[in-house]
Image (cartoon, rainbow, N blue to C red; front, side):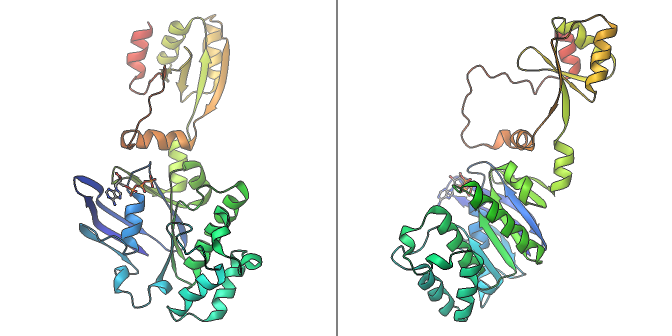
Length: 320
Ligand SMILES: Nc1ncnc2c1ncn2[C@@H]1O[C@H](COP(=O)(O)OP(=O)(O)OP(=O)(O)O)[C@@H](O)[C@H]1O
């Protein structure tokens, strides 16, 4: 279990982590999501005792990292892949770690096997691909057989095979009853991996929720309809009690209605339709909406229309 209370980190004028409270529970994968610069890595470094909080605290199984007599047995982390001596073999790197933590040699063979590095274990890690480096980092995290695991952006730069392998491993570690905390800025990846979600933006918690809840609340669908009689159609749809917003290409987005209902309203009024389809809003969209005000650097998209501020009533009035 990881518990943060009032956890804060300031770097000069920048508040990287702003008095956050959260709990990461055993037996589940907790995804830690946020845009670049949100404070994910800073939080994870504080969990691992690599950065000292400016205020508040974070504990692993009830104690700060540095207060554990044998921390490798409590928590393992993949923070920065390839943060190892490139001239050393994978085996020697792990053996050195094991020896300095009183871990038996056979555990080194076990973890090498577990991450699928047996064939290259005696080769210098300097020549490893990103994927192999990532596997070695995970072997190191698992060395002390810890009950808590922390992975910072574990799938960054990996090919689809590597991504699938890490996803399966992470899920199986949680299924064994371990506490698994995984950061990412990719909502789509988290939707496949995590049971619980903590979303951070500009150092503050924006959401702390069950993944199924997040999906059912945010993966809404709407009807996309385009007609040469857009304003009249909008008026009639609003009169039925449906929420109508303008879509990017002059079309309408109709919420809470089925395509056949929208088609029937248009047909009954004798209004032509040029397009009518159901659209499933993705979780990625939901995540972008949630964190829109928190992104560190915003890129302008020429010609992009923003429609989020429109309400049905305002739009119907404007369209009329
Ligand atoms: N050592 C440091 N000195 C000064 N500012 C820092 C330092 N480390 C992080 N920051 C700042 O703190 C904020 C949070 O950074 P952090 O790396 O924790 O975010 P992140 O969510 O991990 O982002 P990313 O997805 O880009 O890795 C950013 O504004 C960053 O510039």
